[in-house]
Structure formats: C-alpha cells, structure tokens
Image 1 (cartoon, one colour):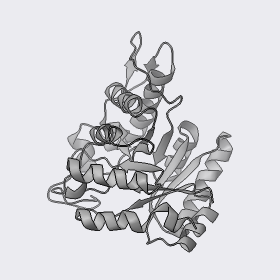
Image 2 (image 1 turned 120 degrees about the vertical axis):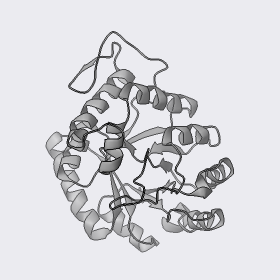
Image 3 (image 1 turned 90 degrees about the vertical axis):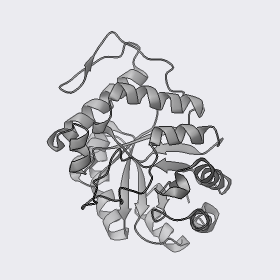
Image 4 (image 1 turned 30 degrees about the vertical axis):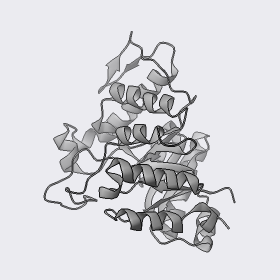
Length: 278
C-alpha cells in the first residue's frame, strides 16, 4: 500500500512545552509516521463561539516556531504546517521563516496553507473575510516567487514588491505546497497553485465526494495532486484500505485536543503505521 500516515499535533498542554512536543515527535519518527502537522490559530474567540475549534484557553504554539524546535529534535520525518491561515500572515516574512525551517531541517518542510474561516480571528488581524481568498492566492504566488525566482517580484492588490531578495532559499526545490479547504473554490485553487490538497475531519462518504471534486479540478488543470485527509473516525487496517481505495495518499491522524501526555502517547502508538498499514 502506498498510502502513508502522518500525525497532526493536536493542541493542548502535552504539546505546548518542550518535553511533551519533543517526546511526541521522536515517538512518531521512531514509529514510522511520515510527517508531523502543526496547526495554526493566532487568536481564538473568547468566549468560544461556533465555529471556533478550540476553547481559547487551550495552549497552541505558533506553527513556525514549533516546527523549528522539532527540526532540531528529529532527523527524517517531514515537518508540515497544517494549515497556516495564510491571509493572516505577511507573505514576505512568512516566506523567510518557512525557508529557515526548511534549511534547518535539511529540506523537510511541507507548506500547508488555508484561507481561514473564523471571522473574529480574521478581523482581529485586519483581514476582511471577503478578501481572504484573493489574499491567499496573491500571498502564495508571492511566496513562490521569493523561493523560486532569481529576481523575485509580485504585483497584486494586496502585496506588491520588486528589486528585493531573500536568502537562504529553501533546500527543497520546490517546497511541497498543500492547500486545505472543502469547497469547490478550494479544490480549484489547489489544482491551480499547489502540489496537494488536505481535507479535514472527513468520513468515507465525505472523502469520496471531496476527492471526486479535487480530481475533477486537477484533471482540468492538467496537474496531479497528492491527497491528504484527516479521518473523522477511529482507524483500523480495513478502514485505512477503504480510504486508500478512494484515492487518499496520506492519512493524518489527529487526537482529541487537550489529552495528557500519556494518553497522547497511547494514541500515537495505536495509530502507528505498522499497525494500520497491514
């Protein structure tokens, strides 16, 4: 089976300190997980309101800082943002930060990005929700120019630059880009601008619908897309086979937020690739 298993670094005190996140990362690498995925929310509504995914008092580390820390404590496992809310970030600053993660990890960065959905968070960071899609597309093109062009430049509504440069460039050429989102617009954007697509908390029926739409847009764009999904159910080898049969290339397992370290370790062990990929 060519499908691989990644680990989503769920928020909580177990992964918000040096001992816990280093322990989970090392365990995941030892058990053969292919990737670690760091979530992103800069601020959360307080008090919590729907559709906020977390209580605002649950600790959540910045993904770039977290992946930099983990780059020094792992050797092989891929390090992914899963997913950076791109419209909330300055693209030039983010490009430099992520390039540093890639360099310090020896080329192990996967750049996962999404347009965001929490209006209180977007507005607190100065992003009109109606602009998040256009900002995301412009920011991604700007970041790619900074990483890949000899003379980086971009001229858009939300970002405009020329006659500047930034080194070091990422080791990976190119850095894999994965875009999240379950709408047809998100699927079209991934097919046009990315190397992969990420679906969050999907059961088998929803995965089949999402993958069909992603494949349709990828075929129209003439580009293959790598499919990653966080499943919305407990896994066993048979369920994993079912996801693989739908065209999923990577399952990114996610524990419940806020688990203590010992329970999180058991979750990581229970979902280890050698147990699920049989």
